[in-house]
Every structure is written in C-alpha cells, then in structure tokens.
Image (tube, rainbow, N blue to C red; front, side, top):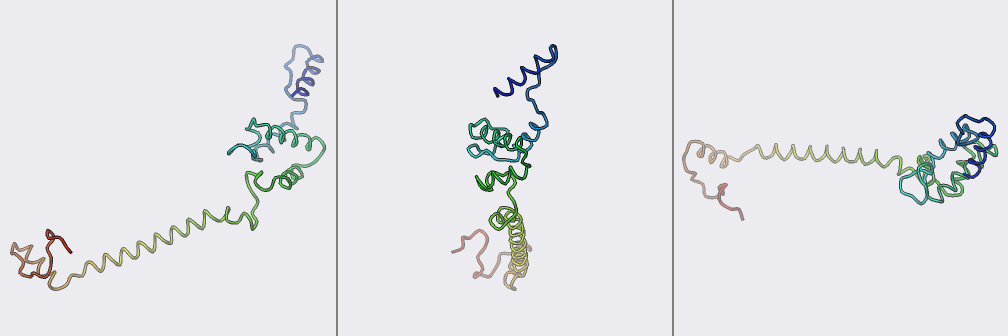
Length: 164
C-alpha cells in the first residue's frame, strides 16, 4: 500500500493536475484481482481472498502479486498455492478421485431421490388398486348402505365403530 501511494505520488509529481492512479501497473492488478476471486480465504467463510480483509487474505494477495510480477503464469501461482494449502484454497476444486463425491454427489442424490419417488409412487398405485377390490360381503354392505337399509352382517366393522 505504501508502494502504491509512493508510486502514485511520483506520477502525481510528474503530471500536475491529472488524477493519480491508485496502482502503477493496472494490468497486473487486474490479473491479481481475477486470480484472487478464484482463491478461497482460508480463515473466512465463503469469501475469496479478493473480498476478505483478513491478514492471511492480504498476505495471499501480496503473494499472488509478487509471483505474477516475477513472471510466473496464473497456473504456476495456482499450482504453488494448491501445493502449499491443498485443493481447499480453490473455489472450483479439480475433478479427481478425492473430489469425486463433491462433483458427483448432487447428481447421485438427485437420481437416488427420483428413483425412490418412482418406487414409492408405484407401490402407492398398487396399494390403491388393491383397495378398489371389495369382497362380496363389503360390496353387499355398501349396497345396503346406499339403499338405506341397515347392514345385516356383524363381522364387518362399521366406519363409526373403532377397530381393535
């Protein structure tokens, strides 16, 4: 930050009356910001190092800046940070054996849930079809109820009587 103010003061001294740029190399800062959005802050929850103001995030941004200034590519910087902190530092972890559950888990849950729902609906349909078939005694009782007669059969409990 002192460096940024120092370089800004030099630019300001060179061209009086013009706005002072915040950083000396805007292209480098754009790359640092782009890369910082892809890297997770290790001490914050759900923040990238670009969004976090934690001291560790500031140190990581400075490391990214220093490595990009030294001529390393973005992939080199990411490889260095992954080697040092593991895949957790990446917001989008790579697809490999250790992250297979992370990538395939939601699809497996969706397929499993859809399969369970289909099985449950099929069983429910079979149960409903089985209930549609009344015995002869149940059918006679239903006809008697519809006709207004009192049912004669005592072995079939009525709807009002509690079942034991």
